[in-house]
Image (cartoon, rainbow, N blue to C red; front, top):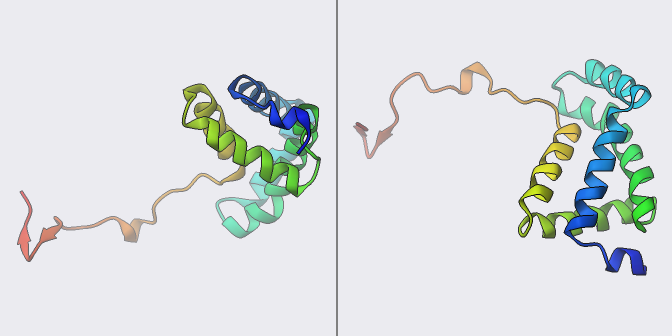
Length: 127
């Protein structure tokens, strides 16, 4: 692990996450992502195939400026450090959640999973 990564603190995590989010919003990247999301819809397999690689590529380009390798190992290191910093810095957590939302499709519960009756506990209706 290089010296830049060893000095990666909450301030650097906020900066890196902000830079990644800005890069995802740049016109060319935003257009590529919009097309990929439209193609994938809410199908998780399609999201992994279409959206995930684009977001990952953009993230890798940014994290290299913070001393991380521009490969899967660098992405894993970055995510692990950000996750550890989420607990001590609420802004890192908020930015990380926002970044994570780019990797995952919007999810809605299927209609058949919504209970139609009141849940019961030990056979008796709950009040």
